[in-house]
Length: 224
Ligand code: 13P
Image (cartoon, rainbow, N blue to C red; front, top):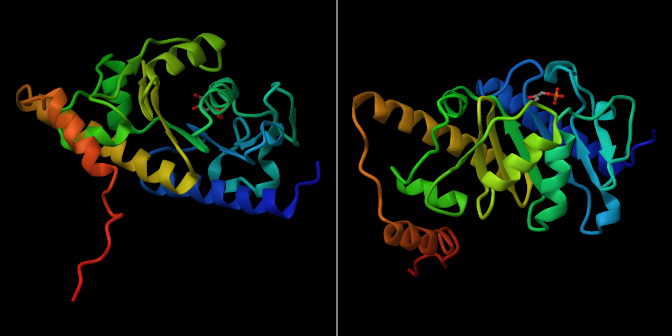
């Protein structure tokens, strides 16, 4: 398949993101996957990492172009989790990029079937008062996609039962930043519960933080 310059450039960004995740210890080998929407027109489809190709040898030409009817072109098969990526990008027009990891602390909580509650105010970054944990289903199945989408309702992250973490954002840069934040929250929560049950913030407080986040970093610089 012939990729356009735009697709190759996006492919390079996706691989950079995968390598960044690997350097931070959030994914390794072939675990996890990444997709990015190609344009606002649903006909444009999206690029997704290929299945079973280690990140450290992945080339932009290895990425797979998928359409929303599930057809794909490229020299590899798409990630085994293409259904989750497709279902998210099709049903959530505000989402431009999806990152799935097997990062250690998120996955530990997911194996305990524990959601991350509002034990820290940064939970509000993810759309509500928790990061839910989906029920388990076999990797690469429609059942898993259905369960993950349910856990993601009104949220931009979910733990995947006995599996990992998934994060959504308007673009790839933001998705990477949110993945790092979600894993950090999972680490802090895991540490906290070794000692005791942390205090949980009220719904009203989470709502207040969400309102503050909507203007965070957007105000005019102070005068003078
Ligand atoms: P892929 O190599 O098929 O993307 O699978 C990795 C994975 O994490 C499955 O959940």
